[in-house]
Length: 399
Image 1 (cartoon, one colour):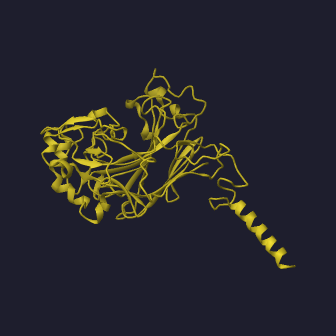
Image 2 (image 1 turned 60 degrees about the vertical axis):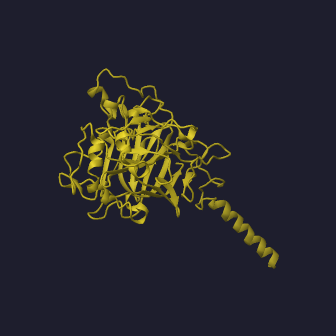
Image 3 (image 1 turned 60 degrees about the horizontal axis):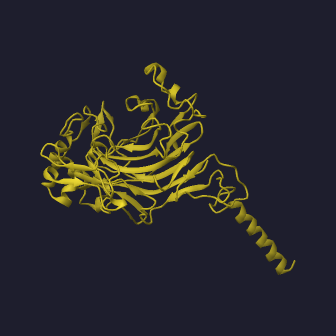
């Protein structure tokens, strides 16, 4: 066999191998693969990885960010004083002191408002977030989120932080998610990685649902009934119901605890979700945390006919049992502080909680105790990495 014939045969094998593995490097998976199992996944937005055929193959990578740069077109910032609707103490802003990428990692970092405006600003300053450009506009007016005037009992949010989202750039329905992240440590920090519906097809929250991939608390020594509920615990859940007062997340809540002394702040973990047409499964590092199956539907799952007789089912006209989780959702990542619901009053901390959840002056109570909690954040060490939510990558695949 001459050299030309041998070279032709070798080249033919190489071409076949490349066609088989596809651009994602797995057999039969990826855009351009010769084998394609049609996917049930849909996605929209300028950063969704679309296919010329219009339909994804199962296993296609449809969204990714490895945070080599901070792409503000991919991630939109919240600009509001309203927090996340729980009267938290942070001011969400678009500033590279609070959100930035460095060495391939996203950092969401808390800073002090007084470092920017001075101490007296908290009790006498005026904040108006109606900026001159679209990027500077207030994003949430609820809870006095766009305008506030500080006073002695009702101070302006004493902490600045960041909340970023893909509402305008990427949303999807059904798929597999993996986010590698390290949780922050520090008293009263509350990080969250979660999803909200793009269009609120079934009405305002929680009628159209909410998916919480991972929530945590930064306290290193926070216990309730002798169980650690600080940095050694994370939760995953779904929120659903016809009204705010009828949110049945308790029936779809999963708790995961780390080994004592090995909190989720110590290293990166892979937070995962598999969202299909009949269930949502949460996992960490490939170990399942919990699964919520649609069954006969979330109305029956919540027993709403029994607990709220006469209330109309907002999902009654849906053609799937997965409603409200049968619509496209977008991704949110943020770092909150304190608030009226995230930290139980009856729990024990190494340093006592300085406010109560019902206090009308909770933010001031929190700020006045800063000599106790601020040292736990280690803001002056290692670029505040202890107190930062740090994300290595975000990936979403089609099912």
